[in-house]
Structure formats: C-alpha cells, structure tokens
Amino acid sequence: MDISKGKIIISGGKPLVGEIPVSGMKNAAVAIVLSTILTEDKCIIENLPDISDVNLSLEILKSVGVKVTKIDKNTVEIDSTSATPGIAPYDLVSKMRASYYLIGAELGRFGRAFVGLPGGCDFGVRPIDLHIKGFEALGCEVKVDGGYIEATAKDGVLQGSSVYMDMVTVGGTINVMLAAVRAEGTTVIENAAHEPHIVDTANFLNACGADISGAGTDVIKIRGVKKLHGVTYTIIPDMIEAGTFMILAAATGGELKITNVIPKHLDSISAKLLEMGVEVEEDGDSVTVRRGKKPLTKVNVKTLPYPGFPTDMNPQICVLLALAQGMSRLTEGVWESRFRYVEELKRMGARINMNGRTAEVEGIPKLTGASVRAVDLRAGCAMVIAGLAADGITEIDEIYHIFRGYEDLIAKLQAVGADIKVVYPKSLQFNEF
Ligand code: UD1
Image 1 (tube, helix red, strand yellow):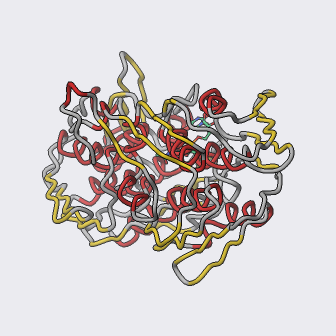
Image 2 (cartoon, rainbow, N blue to C red):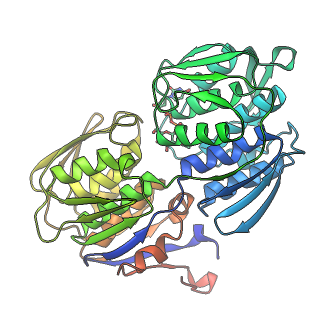
Image 3 (cartoon, rainbow, N blue to C red):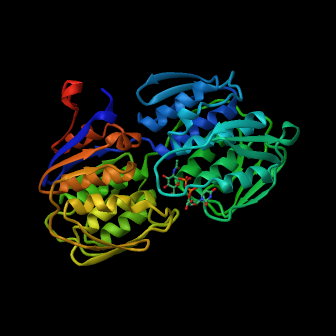
C-alpha cells in the first residue's frame, strides 16, 4: 500500500511505557551509501535503516550502474565496481536533499559529476554554494544550469587544497571530504561541522583505506590516497530518532527505555529534559526517560550546529514546551523556515506566538486531538508526539514525510502501548497496518 495515500490516526492521552529500539542514523546512512562509489569495490553496510530516503539513495546508486543486493531488511551489499559517471535522473535526486553527496562521490571517483539539483524538506532557501566553493578550491569547474550541476576537475584530477567554510555546513563538510579523499595532495577543511554523522562517514572512509583525521573537530585534514577498498561497516544509531522517543516519553508522562543509542550524542537533549524536571538515566547503550505526574518546567532552547541542541529536534521539543508551565522560548539558529508546523500545533490548542525566529510558547496542561498535516519529516513526527500526548483523536495527513526518516514507527509505538494506526481511503480498500 502506498504510504503517501494513508493517514495516521491516534487515540491519545495514555502514558507510553516500555522498551523502544533506535534504528541506524538516516543522515549517516545516506552519506555512507552514496560514498561507496569511491571504493570501486564491494561493501556491506549494516544497521541501515529501512526508510524511504535510504531506499532512494540505493535507487540513485543503481541509476549510475552500481549493483545493490539487499541481504536482509537492514543489511545491503553495494558493488560499485562498474559505476559510471552517468546522469542520475532528476526525478530521483530532486526528492532528497542528501542526493548532493553523489556530486562529491562522483568527483572523487571519476574527476567529474553531472547530477540533478537536490530536493528534501522545505525549510526555505537551502543553498549549496559552500559545497560548490569547496569543489572549486579543489580545482573543479562547476556549472549550474537547467536544474543540473556539472563539475569537472582540470585534467580529470582534483588537487588537495585549503577550504574555509564561511558557515558551518554538515552537507558541505561531508561533500568536500568525499571529493578530497582520492585527490592529489592534502586538503584541510576549516570551520568544519562536528555532527556525529560526519565522524561516521570519515570512519567508514578510513576503514576503506582513506586518510582522514580531525573529523568531529573544527579542522579536518584529508591526505589524498590513490585507491580505496571495500569493507563491512555498521551505521551508528540515529540520535534524532532517539531524541524523538525521549520527548515522547516526557510528553505522554510515561517511561521509555530507549535502546541502541550513543548517550553522548544525546547530551544537549538530555540537558534540556533535566532542566524541565524530566528524569533521564543513561546505562551503557540505553537511556531511560521518565516523567511521571510531575509538571514540566518552562525552559529556553536555541537550536545550533552540533554539539548544540539539534535543529532536527525543533518541532519535537516545541510540543513539550507547549505542555510546560509558563512561557518558554524556542529560537531557531539554523533554518529560516523551520516553524511551518506551528499553525498545525495551534490546531491542537498550543499557544504559540512567533516573534521573528523565536517561538514564544505559553504552556497549557493538555493538548486536544485535531486534524493536522505533517509539513515535513521532523514536523510530522512532532504531530505524532502531540497526538499521543493529547486528549482525543488526532488525524495526520501527508504522512509520507514521516516515513522518509523513521523505520517501523507505527509498530515501535504500538509495542509501547500507543493507540496508533495508518488507514487508507476506501478507494484503496481501507487497508491498515
Ligand atoms: C543536514 C541534515 C539536516 C539538518 C542540517 C542541520 C542531512 C542529510 N541533513 O542538512 O537534517 O537539519 O544538516 O543540522 O544530513 N548553508 C549555506 N550554504 C551551503 C550549505 C548550507 O548557506 O552551501 C546554510 C544553510 O542554508 C543552513 C546552514 O548552512 O542555514 C546549515 O546547513 P547544512 O548544515 O548544510 O544542512 P544540510 O547538510 O543540508
């Protein structure tokens, strides 16, 4: 059944209790899957989340001659031996922001790339000027024309260089790293982003024979190597999925043991929950979040690049602020149009006033179920949290956004006591799962 035609129906108001596992990280998976092109060999990627953005990345690989074999739901063999610097179809790459990694990967392997401009969530202007500036610093000529980007290295060989990022960009940092891995000489990326998926991508490339140091700090040094080789690699857990479940436990007044996490990646989220009076307990690779009957305390949050509070947790924390006593302020420090979900949350009774890039949120004791839309991936998941915390029935439309990034979400939530299902219109025979 086509999930894009379905609706989520929630009967909310019950505390969620139990154990809930976290899947592999979407943003690491899409980068690593596309960067396998650089290896010219077979790789096995494990803990790969079965979500539409990852499956789309695998389709993109196939469109440029890569052989993809699913071993099981979360393991795939990728053989890029016979990849060609082909034209990745616009209708594939335009569906996903991270398709831009194909540019860096093709440049690194072939010295040239021809790729459709990327799509993804609509947060306003999402430029890739810093990626382009980085490719140019490595000796490439870059043209953007008719929805496509064409990049060519002089004499087919990229030259290591110094690249200063004017803004901290996750995608720009990874993309320049991919292009530089097999360049001649050394590349130094300054003002690099620190996100865990940058470190995971660098770890994957190093396991394949690359020479990258400093990933996770401001300065990344990449000494070009002639060739890479295939490996078996396991993707790290998704900190945003974990953070979403942490907020869910707090919003529903329940207790969730969230397993398969790296607690360090969750520090900024844990800190805000503790400040709000929620209990957070780390134990090895799990974290337990418990609120009980205690009221939530107001708090101010500003989203920032890692290790700051993640912008991809903005909509989810907003649901919690909407339930906290007093006036909280949530300021967006990364994307200009991240707050498009606010009108939806207000339909459920939330009291939010927008003041520039700050949401002033006056907490209320309970939200009320309503019909709402998933305006993008994380906003959609915030509607799920709001619906599960609210009294009454919530219906969420345009849910295909949610399944871009959350594996088995409905089943995982049902297993901890959520009354949630997907229904399809009668014309699609009213199937549910
Ligand atoms: C990645 C994540 C996304 C997350 C974002 C910020 C993936 C696939 N997506 O997106 O979920 O919300 O990081 O944590 O990993 N910018 C420029 N020029 C550029 C590139 C970026 O001005 O060339 C600006 C953007 O407009 C934005 C900021 O830099 O304001 C951060 O963007 P960036 O870190 O690049 O986000 P993405 O990598 O696209």
